[in-house]
Length: 570
Image (cartoon, rainbow, N blue to C red):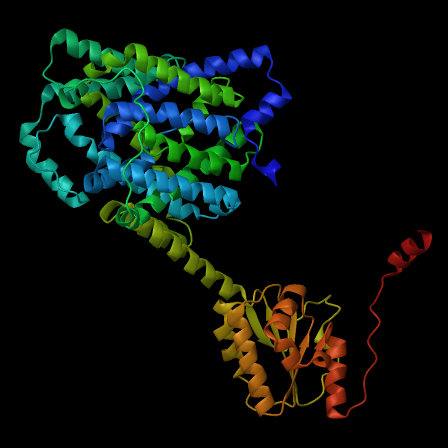
């Protein structure tokens, strides 16, 4: 069991890391660290906390995720997916509440990992993921409008529609200099990749606009004018104050953080697998995410998870082992120590433009449009999740999305289950009823598909089509691979009714899982051990014995001549 929870860093060091790979990983780590710097600051500010808290998160969580994770190339840190959740928690409970919620989410992720639920998270339906991701992207984009245009707002409403109304009303306070800085940033982000991809466009944009703002003395709000100085070191660890009332209130936001961290990190790991040709350990990845989110609040950080864009950058830069992720964290720490004090000069309009670009790439609008051509149930899940994310709350969106997707899935499964009188046999079916004599007063029904609560009512409705009560009722179960408690109850009602009507109930072709359920519930013995058969021929002969008719020998299955020749030669 313990071999399932070995970090990829340990496996990599056991296999051996050559000097060439080590140099490549160090270079990749430095590049990703530089890329992560502006994003860490921007995500922190957009989340309603101080800019340095984003760097603290990238350093601490980034190192832990790479050190203990189940993916060799995963890069962890703050991401855009958390912005809305974190902002709401900070607004309502302050940073103390956020720290407690993040640590609770860490515990939930640890439980998920050690319970081997890593594969289960992958069952989150794709339309739901696109729905809340696109919703988050839209909210991130709109929340950056005031800084991009340099608006001065007396009060910003919490709801989406209220925000848009406030922005429109506040357009008379537009700062053309801030707008110019934001526009220049967007231009650099769009066109710099055509020049070179070795140096990130976000870094070039920050340096260029910061220098221009300082030299020209532009009247633009900066990190320093809004937040004051930025520390040049990690804070000492401190434990947040926790009480039972706070835990109860934060259980729902903590669950949202845990779900987002699990989904984002495993999606990122899957993308990375496709790029490097290796498979990640999903359960170990969840354990690492849990450790990171439990520890990072002790250092003033915010929720963290695997970052798809930074992970892809790591791979493209030559990173192949967890060493690159650890170097990325160390690089950010060194930048904080030696250059942190200069961060106060960065214009807020620059960071807002960077986040707008992040939101655009995060929106997956092409997939959103493509999914509109999907089945109606998938469209409904996506649109409901998107709408709830934007207009209500992300926590509600995830909860409703999961429940709605589950219900629709169960409805689909129930529709796949066929309950038919007699049987529509295939032409080459050796068990076809067409070549068998079925005695009078014998009815045969067959269930094809999972027999669970979604199909139980359909089973009852189908049985009602029989007007004249038969003396023998045979239920063919050869295609039932799964049975649940509701199906057992429906079957029990059928047994009770058959006994009242003095009708013999026979089961044919019962598989292992349904048979175990029948035995454990006691229904097997209520039906009668002699009335459960492995095939339809024995079941029909059992019916004949009950009716006092002569039994018919079981037919010999047809074996092709070629097969006999092969058998003989063998």
